[in-house]
Length: 618
Image 1: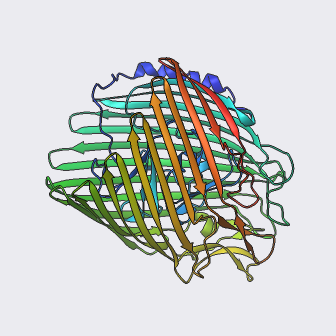
Image 2 (image 1 turned 30 degrees about the vertical axis):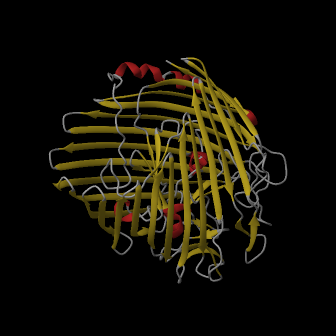
Image 3 (image 1 turned 90 degrees about the vertical axis):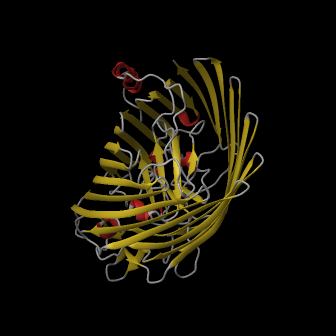
């Protein structure tokens, strides 16, 4: 595969520079936290983890590996389906936002395929764990991951990189920020011949990715306008699963993904009132051609309109209210057979309203209480809540508590999906609901910041998508009668010594099914060690990710048997050197220990790899 007209497309982007009239701001502009409350804030009640993509890979879920108790399951590499599970929850229990716009795919089980995660235009990644449905609705059962693309300063760069697996990447970004607003124009093209993802054979499975991003904001006296337009197109070669053992075998499968995201935001702020109107639209198209040549496709669409208002009762108290309407569409195309016809179109509407109260008593105690009512066209109405407390004790110690409920509506595919030889949908499914409780503390001792979090989740009406129904003669989805449970501990530490920054994290997770068996693809132990050093022309970064043993299902027998996936360690390092103020060379090394590991049974992952790059700035 090749990225057609790769460089010509990227080099057209600088022509839009003349359209921008921004000048760089002299003073640092504080960043707002988007996910913690219904309206952006600089002082969230609950802690929000913030990552700044730096020398990480610009594609895939690798930039998220430092988040605590986050399990990544990638079917191979370089374009293979990648799922992320937060604190043992299901892959579609995490809400993913880009500049506040939901990108969970209605045509992909209402989850986001993290293999296409592109951080090339992102200035920061926010992570808000725990049940957040009282603020953000159905998909936020286990937490929210948000990519912010508002730049913190001027960026004008062209980057090129090449290396292992015949991989090439090119990117361009023009961005700036001032007191009058900001703009961010970026594009990324990547192409790799890939590697053989199956245990046998030698066929390489490639991946091609092309994305462009355009966003901007205009600030006036008490008002703000924002807009975003973003598109991604990818092609992923894959090996189909064999009928005998359901493990990947060399074959010429090809999966495509086309995604278009658009959004408009208008904000108005007075002495006491804040108003925000958001309109956003997502379309996805997912054609798939199997090794046998049979073509299938799914397509999804989402439109959402939301209005939020905040009223300051006093400097320490504020009431927020919101109302939103969401419409989703799902379409599936395929070849009809004597077993059934997969061709279909479905639609789901939801209208929601909610309230949030934020209060503070002095500088130490703060709290928020949220209620949300969701009215669904296909399900019963549901009321969710969240209560958050924060106390700042003496000696730089902060305590917090989060209690709330999360919900997740069944996906279109769980309800109506139809693949005669593997799955038959169940339109009678009920939404899942999660009771969440977490508490934590954070303290600064000298130059060291320490944190601890304890969490507990109880999931009701969990959807089992691998239930064999003898009457149907195949697999379907059903709600579990008993609750499944997840609980664990997270520890973090960070410190700064001169030009060096060090961080570490460890997570323990006990995630169990309703029958008390362990949930698959959730390691009990995980953690990381990270170091970054900057001095003069040098930037150095190294991270070790530790992933403990986990389980997966083998479908070679019926019923499926549990198998163990061994623990592994991923060590990566990166270095960048400024040859001149405008030219920077970089070296990125992945999987330095050349670990041989599997995150999904039967899917091989890349070995040791090296990538050289150059970045031009002006």
